[in-house]
Length: 142
Image (tube, rainbow, N blue to C red; front, side, top):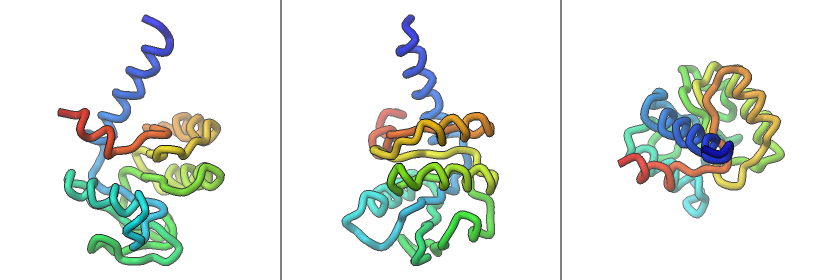
């Protein structure tokens, strides 16, 4: 078995673990009431999949019936997964905040790539996936 095959299998195991075994509270960083944004659509999908979503956006808007917060640190309850919809240049700081609040996992959406943040997050003991989307991964679970 090649290194690439083993790496892909390990990543798939991590995706499955985050979606099925990590807790059900997902902070969605970059989520606002802009219905045209992918974060809005993915948050609705995660709710249908049984996840509690927590909008994280500077405007702290209520989205999909859930109270929003300006930062991860402002959330007054535990967060299991931090789903990141900000650009790659900002994603590393969000991953570091996820570690600081005690999240179980970090999920960088499609197009969000920061290899150094990935390494730091894994070294801190969190599960992490990068450049993936739950809308693509959830149907693969069946």
